[in-house]
Length: 84
Image 1 (spheres, one colour):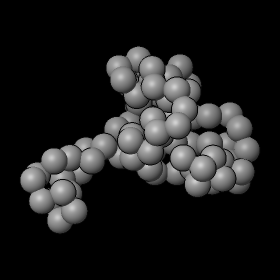
Image 2: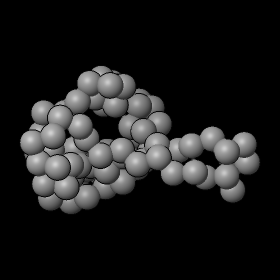
Image 3: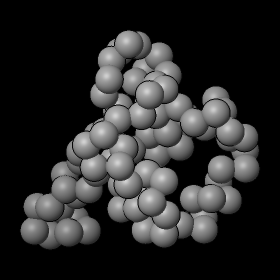
Image 4: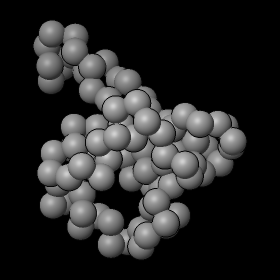
């Protein structure tokens, strides 16, 4: 997927927690070489950093697997996710 203008987004049926067949959108981020998978909803809760890329616009930098790459400290990013 290198060179692609799309980032990896997985849609997973989660009927057990939603009961109505709604889908949860999972996003995989590569932050400084550490992979994080979280929901689109979590990333959009308290910040607008991810709003444009997750609503149709794309990130410029993807890793070789098509995951969004953020060139920051991957070990510290877990605290950002906990905050969200």
